[in-house]
Length: 193
Picture (cartoon, rainbow, N blue to C red):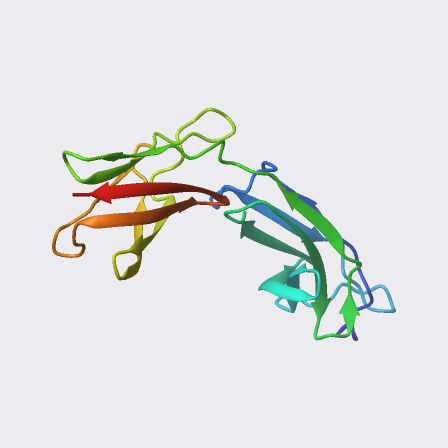
């Protein structure tokens, strides 16, 4: 027996944590997807999962049906947000939307400038559970001033990162540095003499 087109179905989410930490994996599952005669939809049929913020598509994922159910494993975002998720099969059968809310993970950013070493020191940074942010968490620097407008990127190690202000890249003067980690940012003014 080959099933015909799928009927509308429901989806549900199981979040491992409520935090926007860019590393936690959670799951969205469909209920059993059937055709109008009650037959399970064929294994391998793809279900599209649209992650929306208002009218904007943020991400599109696909997961195959296995045993009548599709399970999507996805990574949490790196900043707090609310998303509506709706699933569909070939734009015919679809689910009602569900809402996912991701809370802030980073407590605050602390940063300083060491004049002697000409280094911007970030951290140690901790998350909501009072643990260091994971190694590899992205740190972004926007450096403006003295005819410079540069972006630099780094990754935390043991909750910290140091950016060397090299004389090759910058000349002495006043700089405004904005440091971004996840959804948090902090300004830092530097006078390099």
